[in-house]
Amino acid sequence: MSLIRALSKELEARSDDSLRALFAARPDLISPVVPDFAALAARASARVSVQRALERLNKPEMQVLETLHLCTNTDTGHSVSAAGLKKCINGATLAALEPILNKLQELALIHRADPPATVHNPGRQRFYLPVGSLKDVIGIYPAGLGRSYTELVRLQPAFAQRVVHLVAELHQSGADILAATTPMDAALALQRWTSTPENLQHILSEAPVRTRPF
Image: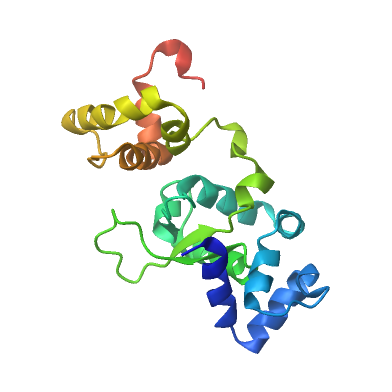
């Protein structure tokens, strides 16, 4: 399902009060009036409208949204839950994250999504994806980071050929990383493995001295 279609279905299921709150927070969505929910979802996903919405977010909300962007992949549908974000934001708690995610969803900046295939027991966790234009608004490399592993798989054939073997070697060495059989799965495994503060600290502690300050 496309991102706009998924957002459209979510908007259509909202109550009148929820829609009024959305229009109050993002008045550009109803000026001019849209004919249906598909058009509303398309406008809510437009780069200019998303930029305006982001300008009203506070620092914690923006941090959560940036982290969600880094932990998801709209091309593959790889979503993330509050529990997944908690691992990537130092000091974060579910009690703090869930209200922020609810607000971002109310603002139609993120929407509910199916759990990733790698999550075998999602339970009652809610998983999210951002609107497709978010990467254009906050930048391809938020927080000053470089290309993601998934982007390297798409753009660098040499990396795509090596990444499955790299993940296999890490897995065999005892690293807490999921096994993978395809380049994209391997890229996602690397992305998850390096995204938690604990794993990153461990990686840096064993890195050459000159690389540790980075």
